[in-house]
Length: 172
Image 1: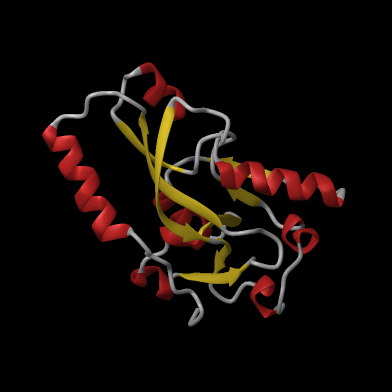
Image 2: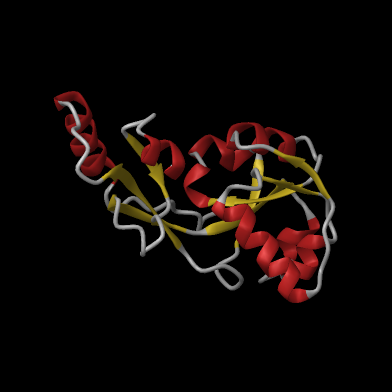
């Protein structure tokens, strides 16, 4: 997304903060999110209070694509722990990831903001705050680029609607 914004191909992106040393971009913080483990209902990992990365790596993993921040975090933690994993599927469509997890193809490490109320009856979820730090999502634009009224209005509306959003997974 950052490259598309910088090239002018897109006007804005919903993403993690760009590098702090990149003065060509503007970033408006919207909300904080956490990383969670998604499993099929009744999965053995759900019985652990704080599943470790070593516990998780014993199961087939379904992850987002290699460019995603969450995927990079998972790979860093796996490497630091000396663990290896069997990534059986990688895709950027979290709705598809959830459906593959639901069918028992593997477990997934994803962002909590991708969860919806209807997922409650289909997935097991465990917080991974003890492994991963929270992250930020915001709106990124190219500094100084003219943004039409429609784009500016969209940014304002999305900012009002999403600012401070936080997924509630404590009841899962």
